Length: 318
Image 1 (cartoon, rainbow, N blue to C red):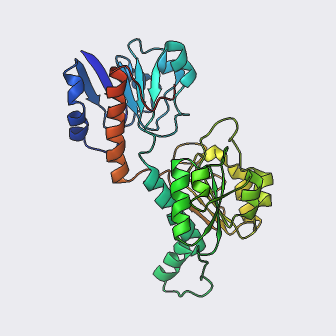
Image 2 (tube, one colour):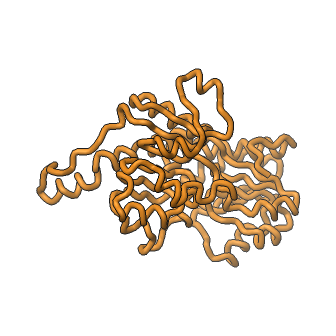
Image 3 (cartoon, rainbow, N blue to C red):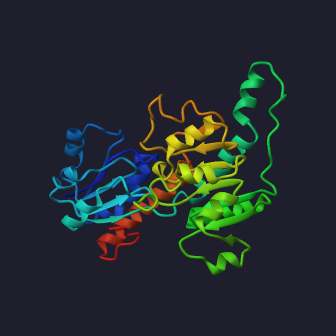
């Protein structure tokens, strides 16, 4: 019997996964679900070695492990980004990889505004002040309405963020590799990256991580931002030079930052540069993680397997 291995928890019940896998069982596949994350690489290899198909979320899967899986044909990534999977190793072995594009669009977009409002309205300081028996003195913040909301990357999440920003009464200024006429028709303005960075009151990042986007927001671009700007990163951690960001915040630059992603998966070191940076709200890579999103992605990863077995892969990235 061939094996489909769910390598790590997906945030849904095994009952749901087994029910979604019924079509594969009729084709001679067994679904093996692991309810814990295994970080020991030797034990992880033992977990996936016999699999024909691997399902994983955001846990790294190295080329060393991929090369030692003789039956592996397909990887269904229950995540949008795939930079944690060694795609070169997959290409060399002829392994097809698909992602779960679109499953967390709404979840991520909503947290962008949770972070932005938390920073701009001093939600965490207000909470602490209230619990300590204090008042609002010195804590009134700023509104989103009327601000220039910069969006870097107008894929599905970026567009969702732009539409919510517009509903808040913001002027949306977007950067994308190519201007999208249908979005211009909706009232969204496009500009080059440096203009968006320079003019935004709130700058929200929505680009994948690759060689071109690593440290896209570096010390130079941070310095070019308004002193009163807010930076939101729910994309990938290394898109921002976090050391430069922490240094700028400590020097009084920027109104604040809301950061959900880091150079590594949380837990982050307690001495991470942003841990003691002022005017920050940090979350442990949770933007994608809503109960609704988890159910949606479970369906997507299983649909990806159906398409692969039918010889017509969808959401293919490799």
